[in-house]
Amino acid sequence: MANLVVHFEIHASRPQQLVDFYTALFGWTFTRFGELDYWSIDTGDGSIQVGSAGQGINGGLTQRRGPGPQPGGPVSGANLVVGVDDVDAVFTRGLDLGASEALAPDDLPGVGRLAYLSDPDGNVFGFISPVLSDGTNVMEARP
View 1 (tube, helix red, strand yellow):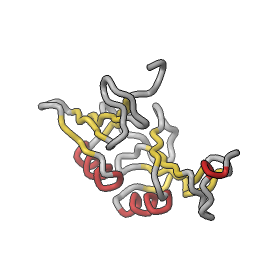
View 2: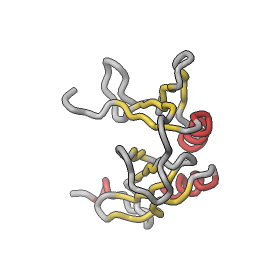
View 3: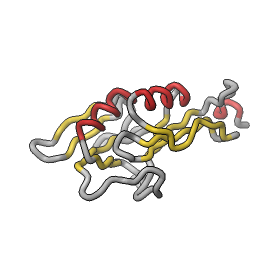
C-alpha cells in the first residue's frame, strides 16, 4: 500500500448537522467513538478497510476547532471529491438539504461531469461522474 490515500476527515462546527447532511446526501453511515467528538464514516461497499484493499476510502468527522470557512473564501486543507452516478441529481439534492453552490455542474471533456457544493458548515466538496450531460460515458469513449 504505497502512498495511497486511505482516510479523509471532515471538520464540523455542528457535527450532528453534517452527520444528517451526508447521511441524507450519500447514504454514509456514521458511528461515534465513545464520548469523543469524533465519528467514523463508512462510505459503503468497496471502501478500503484495515487489512484489505478497496476502490474507495472511509473517513471521519470531527469537531471543528476554531472558526469555520468563510463563504467564498479560499479552501483551507484539501478537497473531497466523491464518485456519483448522477452529478445533477446529487447537486440538486445537496441544495435541497442546505448546501450552497460552489461550482455548478459542468462537463469536462475526457474527464466527466463535475460539480462542487459548500456543505451547511462551509466545507467545499465535489462529486464527479464519467457520464457527460449528453449521456456520453468518457470511460467507454477512451481508446
